[in-house]
Image (cartoon, rainbow, N blue to C red; front, side, top):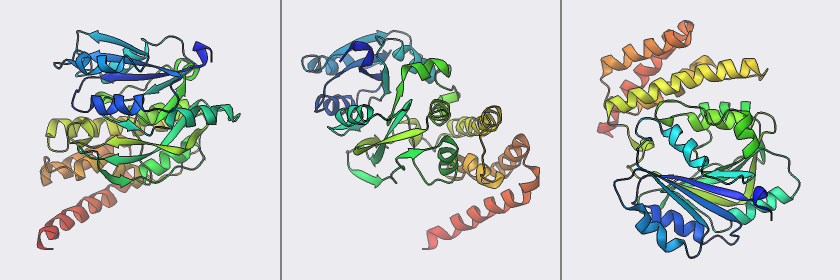
Length: 317
């Protein structure tokens, strides 16, 4: 296969704890028609000590960036890691702690060679813990998912989505101006997949899965640090506003209710113990007003009261 038709697996790396597991899952691929690009985000750990043992079995391009960009601009580090690639047609943005089934790459090429016309492919996922034990088998996507349905299912918490289970075409990456950038890269993946799947939908690759790690050491696990929770909330609100503008500009219909969107945006606060009861109500009203949802303010406050009551009775069970 020509190099410009191949797959680039891009790992914007920083953590070392699970990097061996990630690379081992890549080494175990039944099809090795790909190049691995690892962008070291100025990690305090010696990542190359782990990586070098895999260079005998994998085509790896490694670069250490002395400046740690991810702490301020994680999407920026994604982008400079993608910039390391060598004109491969397909890009898989992976991570330094997740793992892939041994047949993921072969299944991708099988789907690609079946004649499916798509800019964005997706793998179904499982969620694993820090010990690599499966803690949740997520719902499978349909074979083809339109972006408006993707957004609705995400808002209603019916499907899980992250960064690592998507493979996208290089041309769509440039056509849509790369990754959507929010603070902490929170919601950046959701917005990006909406952009990349707009013209040809999201096509799921069958019979292979990716395991996404919920370890307590990633940003998704952080619900106890108040400043992080509030930054996530801000990104959620920006995402809702961006979707409204993007769908309108591209004539995409969207049928989720304003209450659905408020509940989703505010879920990071609901799940956190770092925000006081008084602050939750103040933040709730602020979000309602920012989104222009003043008509649902009573329902939003009732929703917060429901959660306060639920929390108050949980310890007695």
